[in-house]
Amino acid sequence: MSRRTRGFTLLEVLVALAVVALALGAGVRAAGALTDNADRLANVTAAQWCADNQLTALRLANAFPGVGDADFACEQLGRSYQGVLVTRPTPNPGFRRVDAVVAGEDGTHLVTLSTVLARP
Image 1 (cartoon, one colour):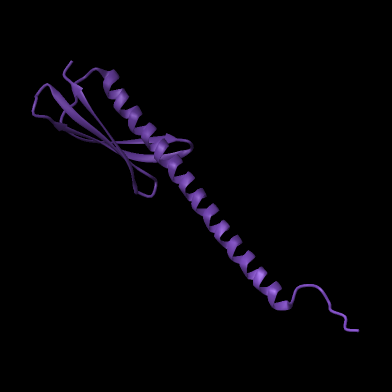
Image 2 (cartoon, helix red, strand yellow; image 1 turned 90 degrees about the vertical axis):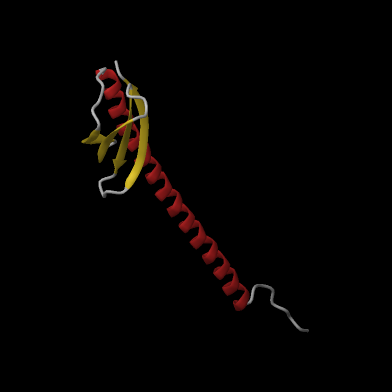
């Protein structure tokens, strides 16, 4: 009588382990990309809050801004941001275009928010 052993061969087990290792590696890489994207989204959102706060302060001041650039600093969510308010004339002398350009701590550009202010 010949008795056959049932089970997996060593080659089949090694192939299965290789497939599982590839799947886990791809999963870890995808999770890392999601984490990076979430951090970037938090940075851009906080930078947009900074820009919006600066432009709102200009509107509330009810003063006609002069043409030129003005630096500002802002802190949101425990992070520091540097920005520049860029005020430029428009074809209509009763209006000014103001761009709030915000960069992160490392100097990378994060967001630009624009508005038009009228002479009061």
